[in-house]
Amino acid sequence: MQSYRRFLDPKVIAKISNLNLVAKLVVEGFISGLHKSPYQGFSVEFSEHKEYSPGDDLKHVDWKAYGKTDKFYIKRYEEETNLKAYILLDASNSMFFKSGHVSKYEYGCFLAASLAYLMIKQRDSVGLVVFDEKIRNYIPPKCSRGHLKNILQTLDRTSSGQKTNISKTCHDLAETIKRRGLIILISDLFDDAESVIKGLKHFRHKKHEVIVFHVLDKYETTFPYDKPAAFQDMETRKTLSVNPKLIREEYWAEMDNFTNKYKRDCSEGMIDYVKVDTSAPLDVVLCSYLSKRARLG
Image (tube, rainbow, N blue to C red; front, top):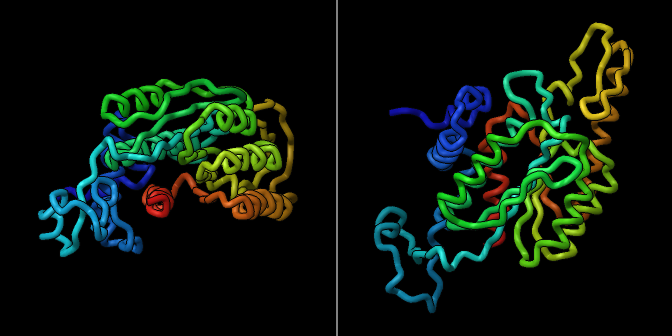
């Protein structure tokens, strides 16, 4: 029998050109490995079922689920769904950096596609916002396989953009989205941190739940370069000639300050923060989402 779990490896799924197939393989691999992993306390059953509570109509009990789990579950239907989620994907130039097989943007696409697939499988509504310094694509939340196809096609067509302006996107959307929901930001967060946090807190002020996937390349966190070189900013195109050996420790300190600030400020703002390495298996990030979704009930 084929092992789906290998498709959680970004290096493997990068070889697959069909994003729909990527999403299916990632999610099915995640689900098949869930109960054999450290995350076995989680369940995807809440997506189409909820645990029985006194007062629930017995005619909706799923007896097949009871036979498999020895627990009572009530079937849920699509019209009962009450979660609307918005995936905000950063498509600015810096997201297209890669030191290995997968760029930050490609990883973000895999993650966005997998989350959309999983949400629709759970009967949740999901929308997509692709942005750089402004919103480039906006797809309102829906829950259907045809809608999933629309999301995946948009991800597939997107090319590198301009500079980043995360806070403007957040503020604009916070004023546009009327119904409370779940905001999922996928970005390298290479922007003014204070402005970004204010934008994210705007969502919280509007009563949205927020989860941030901070996507970074391993070379950005480890800075393994040895020889003097000219480094170019992918958004401003400015270059800086440096000797990596002379600045490595200072670079590490700055990078730690950068990520720790986001982690600390998100925590203080009741925003879930997940730091992600583009070489990391996707089950880690999917489980972070699933944990948030479970808490939302």
